[in-house]
Image (tube, one colour):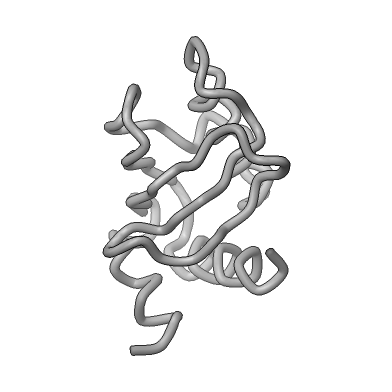
Length: 106
């Protein structure tokens, strides 16, 4: 199975309502896409897992990655878990392309 096909399992939805299924590792040196973790996209995050700082940093980092305002992203589930689901109001192709590019750079 190719990496792009793997990403399809973690990036689902339709244009304007994209769901990201993530496994987040807070407390890393930098934020970047690591690859797949089962059916989730594994992301390292340069923020501590303290008082919601990691969640805020995740939304800010994803907004920057997708070049969207933060209001276009919403944490749907996983507020206190490493497994999170984020909804992105953007075209599906844009989200997949930016994540794949971030992974290849990472």
